[in-house]
Image (cartoon, rainbow, N blue to C red; front, side, top):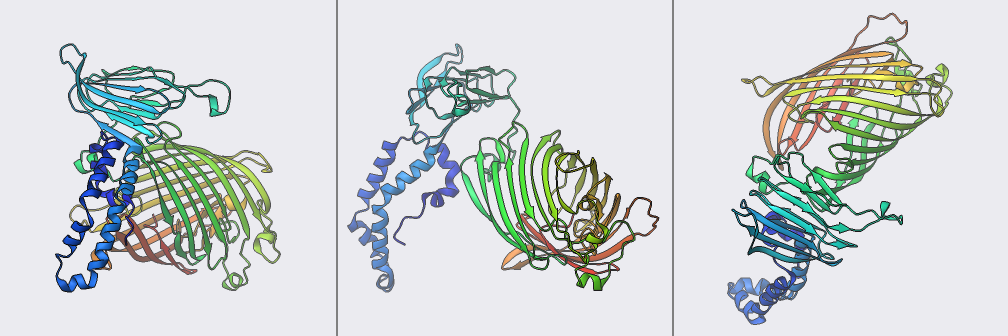
Length: 585
């Protein structure tokens, strides 16, 4: 190809080094280097070099290579401009572990001046020895990031402008003094006539001896930030802290209730300084189930930069898969195969929800979740269906608000295929009488899991789970405590048993078989499991426990980065097949 590849693709592997070494070069230097290279690679020099090939090779490809090299030489200036724009979008300036004096001046709406000088170790005054200087064009650069590292540093940000770039100062170790007297004039909510300085200067330093002097638009963060011990992750982190990228999402799973659930969607990830693993992201997927013939659309906005120290999630969903069958209430309900074929138990529901959730970290592995969810459900009234005959609360259209809270502890070594650790959550949601919900009702869910891998038999992992749901009040039939399906009682249809209380116990033995080299290397393992559970409903007397057993295989690619499992489960009623991402729990 005679066209120059995208500079982002060609320079991606060296991006961390480029950001450190190229920040001091202004545009004139880039232009002069590009011009020098173009002048150096004359037509004669290119032809002479290519003609060094063996005559047979030159006869086949020589002229083609010559033309390609000449074309790419002619594009060097364009490539240089593209590379410069990419590197200069975010300017990183790394200082030293010695005392330094940094001055950042917002000269006007178009130019920001950066000067870094040495400090006298005795007086602390600025020396005449300048170690870094650059005039930054605001139309090219969005952010300036000063990494002061060690030493007793002073950083002074000055200037009053209408428009300015974002300036981030990372104090590092030492007795630092960070001063912001600048002002980027703005307006409240950006559209009102009321003056309100924009927050365009950010100081980050957790040192106890550091002094902050804030202006009208200064953000100060004194939280301790622990750098990775691994030098590779410290200096060349895999996770970005700038720009954005895109991913294609391909929802895929199989269960006997719904068939293959196939879909397509996309994800946009936005990255920012100290916002890990991302600043915010947006997911949108659409799926279709081949057996139940229902569609599902899911949106998720996930924010780590909306509220300091918290995660915010804004989900929305429209689906026909929330509940697809109803067998009645209680632990003794009957499932007749002929009635299944006649679709007697089928439920035709359209469900929509949209919510707002906060995740508040309490400790390393402990966090609190709270939120509010609007739900709108419409269950069609279809004659010759069990749900129509029983007429439970929830038939027809119902909309309501849910208030929820969850306390979760999770120290598993991996979320999808764990070999060690503990998981526990308690989730409570209440539905006050709002909108057209006539009564107060709620549900509490308890979920505990442990994963045990013996030291001397590390290929074996025993996974244990205890699970319970408790529902109270006059709840819609699809909000009762239920078991059945791949998430709870495998081998039974989804939501097979519904009542006031549901309890479940699961045990699963997982065995690592081997590393397989076929197309791509992957780890292969197998599972053996059993589930048992029951529900309690009103005054029903029942001593029956519903038990299933089964097994399958799990696959892990790239050290558990991509995982999926194939399982089969048998119960006294049916045999069910499952394909899903990761393990079942």
